[in-house]
Every structure is written in structure tokens, then in C-alpha cells.
Image (tube, rainbow, N blue to C red; front, top):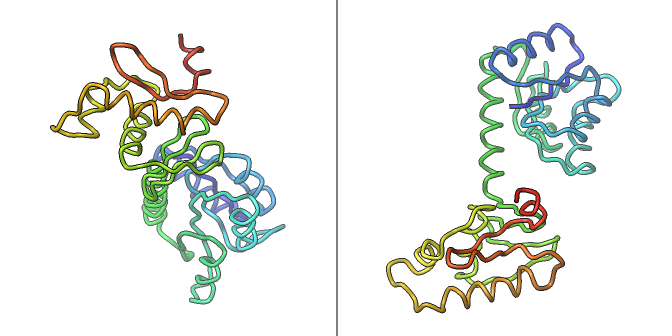
Length: 230
């Protein structure tokens, strides 16, 4: 994982960085709140380890700005020397995901970091993306270029299978099995549903994402990526 450590105590920061790098992580470091916020916004990290008391900008303000102004949802593990319920609640209210009180064992820090990173990866895998097309598997919401698209259950099944395999071609027999199971439809049913899918996914937009491989099947892919790979 790629981890950002924001901690002004150089000894504590060095211990954390060395320990996490020995575990195979890639670690960046900031010694103040302003630099830490800049890195957290412009770079993509799996987890941020954030000290509460920082020069320039404290951890609560940094976390709040990260969530409300930058709209970044990177998991944050907040470090503090204050073991009070009020302090912990304040951290959670400002967007922290977990809390660790100093002094702490580095093994516990590593365990909490791994838990946050795994949670983020699982959440990310629940949203399929191809170009500007997104499919949230939890809410069954489909959007393209930020516009909401209403779809029937059959269309959702087809779209999920195509997006899961993007940019590869999905054979028509596999698509038919995904939608209809063992009760195979007549020969034109899949073609009709793909036509309906194109009408709502592609027709209102500039770039077509659904492509036919005649005699084989279909795929969803960015046409620019297809042309570059061919």
C-alpha cells in the first residue's frame, strides 16, 4: 500500500516510516499540517496516518478540509496523546476512520493500517468504471458523465458482466447464461437487449462504449484505448 504519514515528531515519524517500509509499504512523509494536506489532496494514498497536534494546521482541521473541501475519502488513522472520549468523537466527526492513542505498539499500527486499506479496496471494487461510465454494485446506480441512467434488471445484468470483463470480449453464450441461466432465449433476444443497452448507454453521448465482435460477442471499452492497443 501507499501510505502518507503526517507527524511533526521526527523520532515517532522515523519509527513509523521505517517499520512500514520494512513491511513492504511505500511511505511518504510530511512534518506539518499544510504540507500534509497538500500531499493528501494531490496524491493518491491508500491510508493516511495523521497526528492530531500539528504545526500550521492541526489534524482535525486537516481531516475536515480533506473531506469537505477536497472531497477525498482516503481512510485516516488519527494519532493522539489524548485518551479522552470527547477527543475521539471530535476526530470521528471531522472524518477520521480510526483512532490510536500514543504510545502505541507498531504492530497494532500496522494491523489498523492494513484493516483500513483492505476496507478501502473492498469498497472500491464495488464500483465498476469504464471511461465515464460508472456502475455502483451496492446501490445499482448507473451514471455516465455524471448523468443518471435508469435500467431494467436485464440491462443491469448485461452491463455488470460486460464492465467486469472490460476491455475483453464476452462471448454471447456467456452473456445469455448470465441473464437467462439454463432457460436459453430465442436467438434474437440478446441482440435486442444489447440494442436497448446501446440506446441508453451510448446514443446520448459522443463516444460509443459498447462494441460488437461479429460471430463472437460484445465488449464495453473506451474506443480510444481500443485504437491505442490495436
